[in-house]
Length: 186
Length: 157
View 1 (cartoon, chains in turn orange, yellow):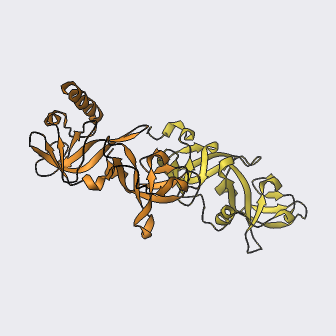
View 2 (view 1 turned 90 degrees about the vertical axis):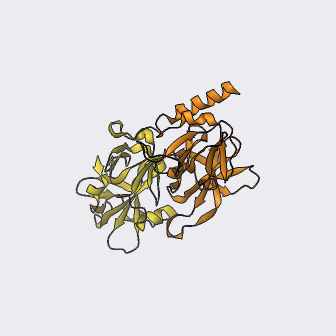
View 3 (view 1 turned 120 degrees about the horizontal axis):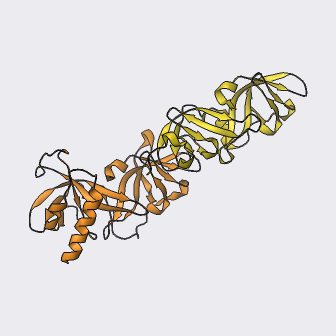
């Protein structure tokens, strides 16, 4: 799923069925792209950023209509010691450039794969360099297992161009194939 | 089996005095036990009064009989106060599974009038086994996904 789809989802407690927050953004680790949690906004017309964040370990379920947590205790003050992390908003707008010097596009969203763990596995890109295709003017590019993110530019291996997809169906296998190919060539 | 909507406004009688003491206006449900814990009896008194299910001796189509009106009590917990104030009314409330899928708005609740046990929750899209109730709150009624009746189960996450 796309990180942008998760933003705005209510965070609901399983014990009291209250909507205690809503997702503002995803927070991921810079080294392997693991989703470490979410930044939050207040709900309703008092909306605005909250000091508390939600750690991935406190998430009981990430559903299409709500993020379920056991109780209000799942929210905690942001831990400054949690290592190098970034938010989707730090990355969106960054240019994606191959290591051979070709611009592929501009990041419009992150692609998140969710099972036991959740990880950022790709970018949705758009912009002038992306041509209109059958799936619109968005493309999905897989990321290497370890990737370095900066807010201005993202350098990806040139071989990624063979694994760019028009939509998210089958994107998981594109990620796997791209990573397997990187493994072979390294 | 009886539905909440059917039994609302049913007159409530005291067996001890044979007086009509009011009508059923709401149900206090203990979500964790998926049972009706008490009935809110409305009528002559303006303050909310509850009859604990243990004092209900008969629940029929025309009348609910409790053992003695002396057993009516005021709501004591915060939850009971919110229920009797109408803040947690079930009908129309969003129903969410514990996996984060919305499965409609609650239309009615079916229960066993001899035990007070909930047997089904009906939404405008599907129905859920009564024992799948997890929590009742201001945002939603939460149910276990595995208790959603199979014909219209939400897609697996």
